[in-house]
Length: 273
Image (tube, rainbow, N blue to C red):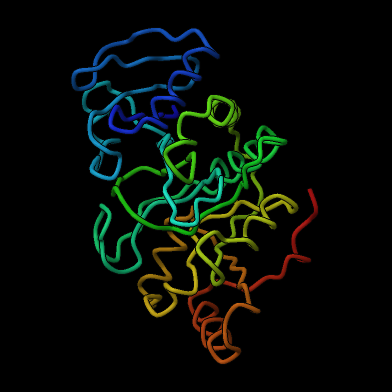
């Protein structure tokens, strides 16, 4: 069961919710908080009144209320960026250091590399011609959960959050997610919008898990590296955006990942889609 979480505090989230309701016939199956639980196939959808960042362990609360444990939690959300570049994003959940925006310090939530990467691929196809960039973001912000989770978002400023075509592309992408069983790969290096990891996801048979941008490299202790691996479905492969970091830092990280049983790969090691 896949749990979609929408927030009444977030107008992009409610836009996506409206498009989801248009696409399928949903059935009420109970309540969660003050809102109905809606069911369609293997999806359940709930609405919360706080911003998603504050919904720690919503998976466990939903399981207690509805008796169903989510395979994955999908947060339909807005995205804000000072760049104001129209962007549709997908990203895992967690914090490499401080917890300035929800979750817990130095704690990653579980990722679902297969379904998250599938969502990005579908979104890239569904958003063709809309004038949006489509990309991963590296792992950042809360909440903290016990189940795999990812965000899928409309960005990057308020005037775009109401775009129905963008919300339609996201709704269609959510409903089409599937795990292709491709190798699970961690991503390390580069910028926040993960250009190389996005390219790999869109061109190679890979399921991307947790990603750490250059600004997070100093937080990659051995314990954090093991969190990245274990909470990405046990990923044992890592792709480094080598050109984005000093050679000594790449050598250091390659050796440390290797010592923990995680092998560096290049894009050529992965089959083309």
